[in-house]
Length: 146
Image 1 (cartoon, rainbow, N blue to C red):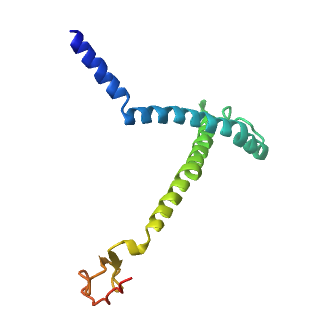
Image 2: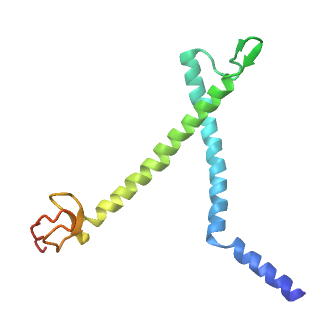
Image 3: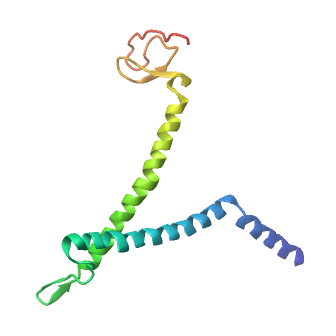
């Protein structure tokens, strides 16, 4: 029984110390902290800016009534502003920099590092050594050796 217990404990320890579990835990904590920062940005910066333009610092009390039915659309506006702000922050602080780095990495490889080239007639990808395109059968000039 003690050996089985030790095996389970060792197995649990191995599971917990796997890289992907630790990475996921770190991502959740960072995500929660990031959410707090973005919510503060919306609440303390963007909402007052919108209030300066429209004259209302909090939209949660906005509503309208039709036939004794009240529609509270103010909260929706607050959440919509929060969502759009979070999307903008993620786009400009995460997606754009990653796209830039990926493009830079791709350009760093150089076009001469590949064994392929575009066909001048149909723009299909063909080997550099080809003298005829396999797709459109056009004759293509050989590539000069560097």
